Image 1 (tube, helix red, strand yellow):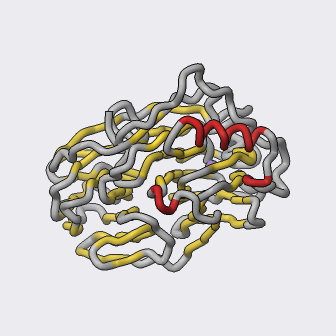
Image 2 (cartoon, rainbow, N blue to C red):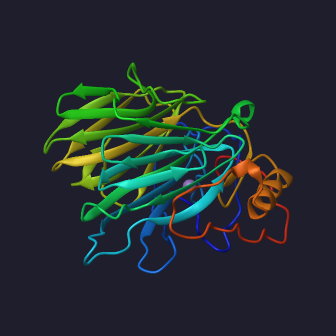
Length: 326
Ligand code: MN
């Protein structure tokens, strides 16, 4: 996924005091991914108040979208674009997405599998709904900021189909990144983090163990409502839970699918602009110039039927690094 806005707003993150256990709802904004018959996504990270949850710095939820070849939208059509200083995580509820990158990766992702792309020093990729596809597309696109010491690592791509599942009562929890309750994803993580999907049966309840020194947030992906430590949550907003919690009590009305994000509060201030995460204006500006000049830093994506995406113009003021919350 790319930030396709033509005038993306600057977003910065960094160190502030943690808040303890809270329950804050963030509705996010609807963003058109651009192009004819393109999809709309609901972006709940970054938002006006919370820019990060742990190292998670971007959350787009899209669908369920009718992408049937005969009647539906064009689905996902994200032309080749660059990234730096982050990892992208693709997780689907329904459908398929075809990923291509400048390392030569060509990978279709389906529900239950996870695509992890580490941009590090620089990478480029495209994402599209394959021609031969299911009629519905539904999923999330996430970014993870790399800590300073690892933000220049060599680019890499991983596809994981064998992910650990925790079972508790009526809940099955797939840990796709990081660690939860002793279950550890095989995917490469660079900071203390968790990304997991919790599936609850109708009437099901669970108490998932949380680390009190981490911050967490949940989002309903699909299905009915769920009660999260007494807070009734439906599809739409991100529920930010703060730090200081040792467990996550969940109770489902009907069958429900929930995304859990968490991690150690990110201590560094970062600059996030367009598809780049850096530490200062000059770093991001250099990445932008190099991408638009076709520099070898970002390689070349082969096989995408369309042009690459040019980086938009930088704002007239210097980008400033900011903290993890406003
Ligand atoms: Mn992308």
